[in-house]
Image (cartoon, rainbow over the protein chains, first blue to last red):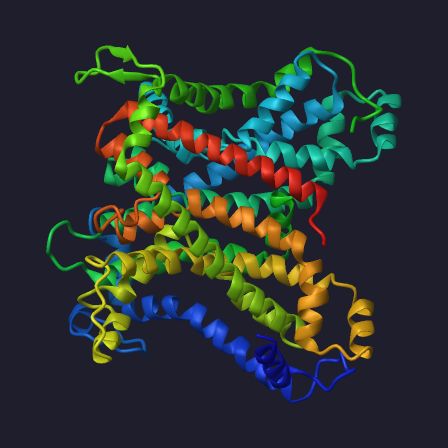
Length: 295
Length: 293
């Protein structure tokens, strides 16, 4: 063990006493990083290649490792005819669900966090503990009874059935509470002296100050909502209401028929584009949201 | 922690918390209570009435060979997912931390698999290892290795583990990288001047300083592998072959919705509830205290 550590140390170690990062080790570091990135990237590359070639090219393995010329053909087929339902419909459903969850959860959480931080009202402590408990239970644990409740309301195959059960946990309330606690008391005092009503203070001071937190949380919740699988699988029996992430599995034929791989892989690529775009274009907010929501 | 300055009145705050109380009451507390309640009954085959059996469902559950083996499957699965997602992430983060130029670019290239849904990751890996068209399984066949995760338990487990860990590497990388960047440079330089080489410094100084992050990620990844990997398992193996990849959450689903055994499924939910509760308590207790040597 000690020997192998010393041996590896010789490979990527800068000369002793030098902490600056340079020398031959640098190239090895880059090499390892590039290999790591390539390995992680490979499954997506393969899916992209498969979405640009024909079915026979895939079913007579090995498939090529460079893109073909069927890009427009396959994506057009996926988007406008799909397998059970056009992928465009599923994309729209996913968008409604992800936006509904992100906006809905942020809205109710902002309001209730404002109430528990800036008011003393009866039941406040009970409410706070309720929030704490909801942090612990993912929807997977209570699926059967939640399904029964949603079915009882006639909300199967509806957007509200997709959205409401997933905004029931209070993670966001907890985060906003933490943030509101850091808003200087002087601001509330000044608002009160000026005779501002609580809601004026909320709209003019608290919400604008929380802008970054709201945006960071939005990024995280959007991805969370977009990537849901089990819940949509249970409550959307009508293909017209399928979301794209759960719809891909439904595109596989039952039995021994061969799957329509080019269309399935094009759908997989389409399913990852929106959340990936969100992560890359809002990288700073995304990282901040992750760190915030896990503290 | 309390605010010194507050507004007066009861009506407004109650109105403000009302939407949240309503939604969590209807879609959270009622179903959770219902799960606990149902776990004490066995419904008759027509669903018209239910017989109170006390802890009978739990006794039956723990005497069930398949349920006990599902516990072991879950333990093996979550240990492997945690290891396979954390070790490469730490390695890549250590490498990225050594770079002054380019670290940001690598970070951008490494983080986005996080955004790929577990179910989509499942489809991607299924495609690579598909027994008929998969590229990787084809090349394995050229090496005279007959890959068949549809029949082979170990290969099925390996595939769902890798597919679950894949996107998770990004997440762990981000946290490890941030933690490494905040290790005080002066400590490292002092050790370097004393002649400690890179890996010596890593194991004696950096790794202990990373322990809060490592512990936090350990808990978060275990929770992830318990609950959020459902999509991966459903798309790749559907719990098979012969329940070899049926983790606890998958069993709640298959017994409750496919097998229609509501009493047992509810009892399983309650067991899971206890498991998550315990994990959360551990997380709060230790993450708050911060683990250090």
